[in-house]
Structures are given as structure tokens and as C-alpha cells.
Length: 213
Ligand code: SAH
Image (spheres, rainbow, N blue to C red):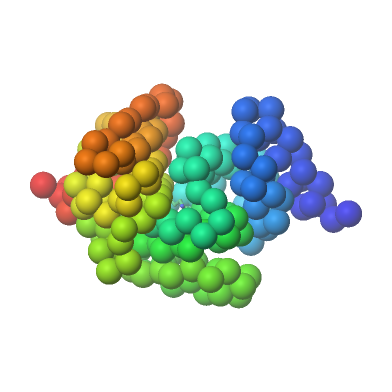
């Protein structure tokens, strides 16, 4: 067994210990090579349960945060999922590995291109584009799930509008220091929401995010 396989098993054991139960999700964590998504200087720490720097002062989220957000999305095979904040592409790869149809948006061109190339190289079919994800991606709406991986001051209205009935948005909301992950479920013309406290993300910057209004 290679070193990374060992470390990946340990990461999954830790995720189980911290309460992650979705077997489809845990299997995806088993199959996606996280070491491919971090900068060369951080390969030795690829399986630490921590966020790591990527280009442009951004971060690849901590494994537990990726697992927590994905589990709350309740995505399954063939779910149509929109991700805002492609970053390294790791979260998108996890969703693709679970069998979701993934659409992802990144505002930094360099990160967008790198992630697109890597996802292609690894054989993941993900639709990606560079732009401001706070306005969503209306051409392919509605989505069964929308996952935002950067912190918003409030939930962007276009994302609520692009959610399918019964679908969920998982989005960090708060100030620039700490945020809660808000899980919103659309039921008919109502939205139900719960918050999970104590997470930290890079800011969501855009028309309906920070610096926008
Ligand atoms: N999901 C990523 C996490 C990246 S961090 C991963 O698995 O690695 C969040 C990303 O959101 C950053 O790359 C940042 O550039 C991006 N971002 C911030 N505001 C955005 C916006 N309005 N639209 C799209 N991407 C945005």
C-alpha cells in the first residue's frame, strides 16, 4: 500500500469519528487523490485535517469542512449540483466521484484554468467557468443542490432563485472572521434553514457578495 493510501484511510477514519456517515461520500473521499489538488510544497500535508493555501491567497478547504458541507447537501447519484468557488477543484471532484452532475464557478482565471485542467486529467466530467458565482449559473438552473465554498455576508438571491423544489443550499454566512454554515431547503415556495456554527472561509467576493452592494 502506498503512503497516500494509508493517509487517506486515516483521514476517513477521522471523518467517521467526527460524525460523517454518508457512505457514498466517504467512498468518494477514498477515491479522490487529495495530494493532486494541493501545491507541491504542501503535498506532505495533503491529508492533514486542515485548510491549505492554493494560488491567489485562497485555500483548499479542510477535509472535515468539505465532508460536512457535502453531507448537508444530501447529494446523490445524478443530483445536479452548482458549486461557487472552484478553487483547487477538490470539492468538485468529490461531487463528481459521487456521481453528481457538477457545475462550478471560480472568479480567478488562473485557479479556474488550473482546476479545469486537473479535473480533465483525472477524468472527472465537470462543467466549469470563470466568473462571479454570486449571480449563479442560470442557463443550467434549477439545481438540486448549491454549495458555496466562500463566506457570504448574506445568501445571494439569485442562488435561492436557481434552486429546485426540495433542493438545498449549503453556504457559509457571517462576518469576515467567522461564519456559520447555513443549510437552506426549498419546500414549495418556502425556505427552511438551520445554521451550524464555527467555520472559517475565505470571502465570497462579487455582485451579491462582499464588495458588491
Ligand atoms: N471548493 C474549493 C475551495 C476554494 S476557496 C476547493 O475545494 O479547493 C473558495 C474559492 O472561492 C476561492 O478560490 C475564491 O477565489 C472563490 N470565490 C470567491 N468569490 C467568488 C465568486 N463570487 N464567484 C466564484 N468564485 C469565488
